[in-house]
Structure formats: structure tokens, C-alpha cells
Length: 221
Image (cartoon, rainbow, N blue to C red; front, top):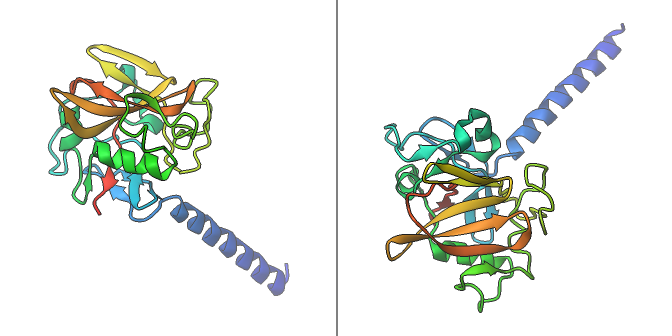
């Protein structure tokens, strides 16, 4: 092998290595979020907000103490990637790192409005933004969602997975629905959002804070 050939090969290998490093870095949108256990989460900017683009999966508070009210779907550790863990409302609040917060109902409405939801539907209960495919713009496009995964485009990069929920001792709706807490109360209940495999809209309603849902934080402005 000539010196020229050796040099050319070295340059090619270096270029490929740099390209791989660059590609990996670009998978995480700055500023990334890091939890108490060192997990680093992708984030995405949507409008004027920065959201987590993955579900929370820590079992620790920012002070590195153990969380209560955290569960893994059906007790299966294989579920954690990419679906994360399920949190009671108190656990979702306690796990939040500095500089971020559990989104309010108003935070979700800001996101939905940015994606085209009419103001007349923003505070309604049940499915909203169906015609604008608000839920479809947030849902991951992959086989983890059960068919038909109606309207899913994930054009926002929010990357919502159908992680199901925990109600009492029962785990339900894996591959069918994704549930996310808000910090907003309605009496003794908490407002949440839900995406479904068979609807392009986004569901808004209330639930007991003891239910286990997925968690996404939004960055403080």
C-alpha cells in the first residue's frame, strides 16, 4: 500500500468518525435535561417552549433521594426503553429538576394552540384538535403504537409513545394510549392529556393524582 493510499484511507476513517460523532450530538436538542441518576433526555423546541422529547425514567429526586409512587409497566424492566416509568402526580412533581417544571394546563394549551387548535376547543374536555391532528403531530411514528396510529406524523419531534397507565394495581392501555400529567388541579383531581392510537386529536380531562402516568417536563422561560 502506498503512502498516498494510506493517507487517503486515514482521512476517510477520520471523516466517518467525525460524522458519526456529529450525528450523535445532533440527536439531543440543547438544552438537554439530565436527571439525578444521570439519564440525559432529548429535548425539542416547539414554538416558544422547550419540551422533553422522551418520557422520564428516574427513580430519584433531584436531591438523590428515592421516589415513592413510581412504577414500571407490568413490572417489566424491558418496558423502560423507550416508554419510561409511570408516576403518581406527587412523584412527578418531586422528580422535577431545577430549571424545569411539570407543565401546567396552560402550557399544554400553548403547545396545542401553536399546533393549530382553535381557541374555541382549548378548554373543552374530551378529544380536541381532531381536525388539526394535534395528537398526530405529537405521536411517534413506529410499530410501538398499535394500528392504526391515526394521524401520526411526529412533525414536532415530541415523540410520544403509547406507554399506558397504572390504575390501582392494574396496568392498562400499553400500545393504545399515552397519558401525561399537568400540574393543574381541578378540585381533588388533576388535569391530564391523553393521546390514542385510534384518534388524531388530544384528550383533556381529570384523574386521581394516585394514577400512574408518563411525565414530560417543560423548560422554565
